[in-house]
Image (tube, rainbow, N blue to C red; front, side, top):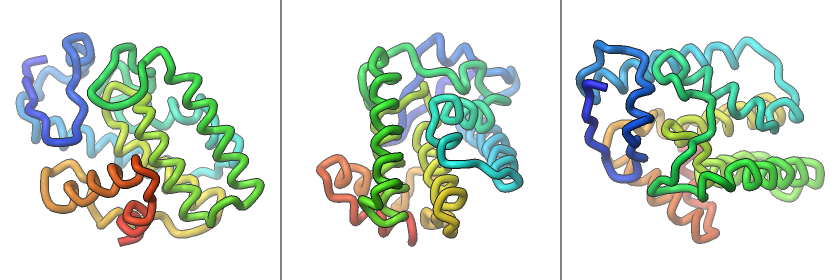
Length: 198
């Protein structure tokens, strides 16, 4: 990769092998990479809008991987494949499958038993998914889109607004988002719920 990106607070650095997975030789700046990824993500969002998905389909390892591939598969060779290295965030890479299975089972239980209201179920799911950090990169954007799919397709509610930001730029909105994630790490999900609907 002719690109040596700088990472802002809360972003996951790629290792050498992961950088080699960039499919475009023309990307030279972080801005170009962000634009290329955003175009791919918009195609994935369009794909989700025009399809019906059931709860069992959405809450499966296969769908989690498929969505990531749809979001970043035009940009990264490893899109849709669980990471095979440890990062500054997330569980040990060897535990991804186990942790994800527990999260999917928990979420199905929350839905069946109405443990939380729909927004809180979707946000708790999003938070735990990003905490597992299944993929080399794109986990925040992937988990937000997963929450949107869950709230819209399963609960028939409006998608989250996420402050109208994709949280790529290192601005006050991204800082507020990271702080809300950190509070959720401590068991306080209210700020992340509020952020999602802001």
